[in-house]
Amino acid sequence: MSESAASVVSLISVLEAPFETQANRAAATASLETYRTTAPAQIIAHDAITSLVHRNQPTAVRNFGFAALTHVVRARWNELNENERVQMLASAMDLWKGVAAPGDAVQEPWLVRTKASALLADACRRVGTTCWADAVETVKAHASAVGPNAAELACLFLSSLPDEIVNPVEEATPVSMSANKAQPPTPGNLSGSSVACIERASLISTLFSLVDSIMPFLYTTLEKSFSAAVAAGASSETAHVAAVQAALSTAAVYAEWTPVTAMHRAGMFDASAAILKAALHAIASQNGDTSVPPASFVVPAVEVLRATTSRKRSDHEHDPFDAAMHVVVDALVYAGHALLDD
Image (cartoon, rainbow, N blue to C red):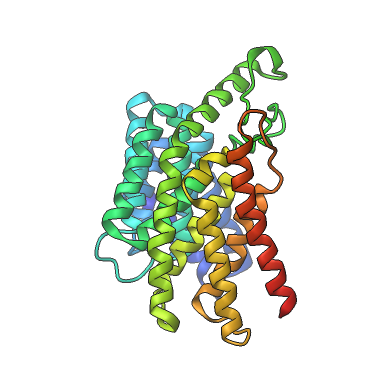
């Protein structure tokens, strides 16, 4: 461990010590902030990757390590040269894989899982769209090889990837995602920074190109993990339950802007509707017992369907769109009746 990394661990131990004085805590906080904002980006990245985020570190140290890496990627990316940027992406992928490694019997903490996934998504957005297809295929392959822990992690990454693209900061001109086929902006209708908006349009276009690869993965994750969770009953493995919840939550994110017909073609609405109905039936059969495994799937399944209800039909895809909406409405009406009957 480097001297600077050891110093970070020591400062965090001051913050975690129950009987430290307020003055010592304030000094430690100030020193950590100075390190995070003024130490060379390369040093911060090295300390975090080689020491701070490792499993043998306390959760507070790992949290700081991931936060420091995220700060480097989001705010200090320009301080890295081209080779260092490529290495940062590779390191982010390695860290992500390490969170759900083959043979892991216990899931990493939720904080670590979400931060590792968000870091990888941040790095992919920074490097640019040229790496997205490979990154998506890599996380899908890892999920297939490792199992439900990695499947959940893959879904967390996929849900983070569109952040700040389909939900831009205020100065960017929003892109209408309400239609079945969203229309990216063109140079003629941009306001604000034209370069930024055109770049964002390119990012959105790349996202659309990946939908046909992402949706089947989400469907397969739901199919495998939902069946495993239900078959296990009350002893359901937490990993399978988490994988279903993550896949549904990711589908809900994509349902806000992904072409409705693409999601329907992949079976996402049928899967969400089936899971919702099965979950409500399981709760009813247990006299309202919400501790049965499928009960935790009700809200995320409803969110997938609810996010779709605000979408508008395009002029040239009436029948496919109507077929998708029939599934959505049927499931929501079923859920409404089931909840009212209770």
